[in-house]
Image 1 (spheres, rainbow, N blue to C red):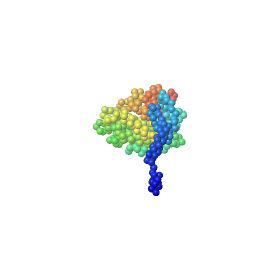
Image 2 (tube, rainbow, N blue to C red; image 1 turned 90 degrees about the horizontal axis):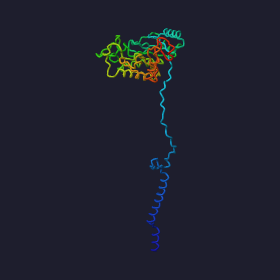
Image 3 (tube, rainbow, N blue to C red; image 1 turned 60 degrees about the horizontal axis):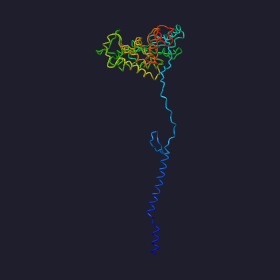
Image 4 (cartoon, rainbow, N blue to C red; image 1 turned 45 degrees about the vertical axis):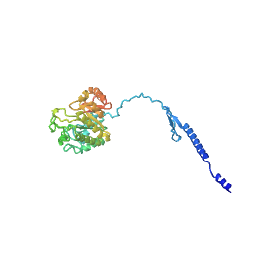
Length: 348
């Protein structure tokens, strides 16, 4: 019986050596499999550095790109397409229905189908606002009872102009300057309103409120439906005791450039063409120290530049504008139609 019991105990035991051997065999098999896996999935980049690229993260092979030719051709900026304007002016008074009909009839009689545009003064250098403005300072708005109807007829009526230009006198404005000298008016060094050589007053381009006043008037004109806003008197005074002007810390040209930038931003929602009138000397000389005008700072900020000129001067003045504003047009202001001027013009 003792032999039988001992036999059963022996049969129930497992050899520790065999277990260790089995575990070792499994590890050897796993290691071999790992080596084979690594050999199949190790890739080398262009520098010879090995990288493991597992199948589930492989990206499709891409063809090697050909070297890019860096010999680029830089194209010159092209002028945006703008309608040529051959415009006549309705004068410097608030428009009436009778006045508009008369002006259009006269233009057609004198020039036939040559004219395709009209320029209307909406603000003059006396500070008068000649349309139904909600921005104008007290006493500045001076219109007739049918001025609004006349403007609607000009812009959208049966006798509407093909192209419309609103003229706005800017900083030469005695009405607004005197209405609020501290925030709007150009002052002398004593802190009082400045009087120019003609005993008139100006807005101060250095004052944000003065620039904002003009921007809001320009927006109102654009909202009426005018295709183009032509700014005049964008300048400091050039007559009188100029050494008595309190110019402030910023330069004159910087203040005027800031104004043009602000008007452009104000008009962006309307898609209105922005233009400025300057003395012809600014085009021939490039600047006016007294006025604070620098042609190279003005031209890139506007679409068109106007100046009074004779037909003979037009080619040289056009070249002067193009030299500093490649996409800026020059429009001469003429006293009579001249066949030698084949592009845009404004007739007075």
